[in-house]
Length: 338
Length: 278
Image (tube, rainbow over all chains, first blue to last red; front, side, top):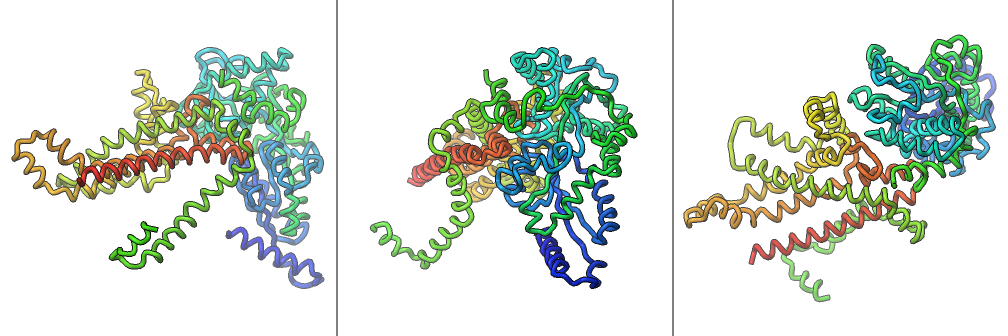
């Protein structure tokens, strides 16, 4: 409600500005707000980005900008936007969630072509976190299906990150053997070793790090670094598999909402800003893989070399993948029902 | 018609007005929101509806939710009766504190309870450390779910029995003893019939609450398909697939089963009360 009130004031302010009072004092006090609806692990990233963008925008346009953030599971966030949360921009965990928003006519169905790199200014990948010293000798995907290994990963039905985990395992095996059947058998064996399916990525992190469950956690690369920072690098270490998936969390402007708020220009500037070298450095410092090669080089120590494959290479686009693998009766259901 | 005519002789005036208010509030607070589930499900059509609510995973989750809620409610019946007895019949220092503790599961956000249990029974938790080596798996098993539901349902039983037990005149029990009844007979023939309707209400409330409980269970259940997925989680996971209709369908079935169970239990209670009075 509060947010709504602020927005109304902002809207009123921008209407006064737009109605053409050139040279008035309005520019000195003008301000705008933007709501960025994002997924769980980006909290820290966007806190840094928003501060830098605000000063960049102030210099460029003289306008003070306040960026509000909302975080939660990627699918839940998409649903909140569909159900009326007036996000100006969405920065979610996977393209399918933004497709769902597009399906409800809030934004252009071709949204992913509007910005560079499939509208993903940063990428990440899926790695393992193990207990210090790697007592169970887990070095690659094949080690996860060995008997007696307990694997922690969230539920792909309720978590976007979990879907990337599942697809990384699937893609690794399919590329290795060239067979989807073997990939299915592999993934089935892997989930046999999973004692708990938390509903979100943060939930799995807590199960693994705080409750001491499991021998290995499958996680976003950036989340893995956060675990080391939060729970101690003396207790956990990151293991990078030989090959993993290139996870592409995309960003988009929600057309209907920016038109309503009169924030299109600002929203466009905000998303384009994410591609600038300055923003890309922040991205790399937060352990997301930057698109900008100079930034990648500068932070090379953060990113061990992993052979990365895209979702399209192994399984096709998100809509197909969601339908065949994660919807009810899909492959994920089949591996649990004999 | 006959029914309404009889009501006219009611000594308490204002039946029309108060009934109107009751219907209005019930509609605004309960019926209208819940009817949304129904209206969300209608566009689905019959066959997709049946398919959505009879997949093996959904069926397994219904079974799990109802059975764990029932176990927990039955356990609460015993534990709650005992606690209410102690709180009503004995005087001891710290009684007020104990009395207040009973309500804590009401006040606590259920997620907090869930996290507490998950931490307690985790392999490195206080109890988990002891139980895990004995091969007693609590966390990520139906047992864990039952434990969480016992916690959530407990105050319902205590708080419904307590006022009734306070009203029971101890003289009746004394009279029974004087007439040669054994302790068990006094309990079985005198006390229990009196308490039974309240006990049943408490158990029903605990049971109904247990079926729908999400927050506290989700952290300790493990959420494995076919094994430890509760019905409310199925609803959540359908929503996460943007399958609003499917989620409503599962919810509708849950609602219908719960409602008919509550109806049956209420009928049993009415019958029992009449039996007791006559």
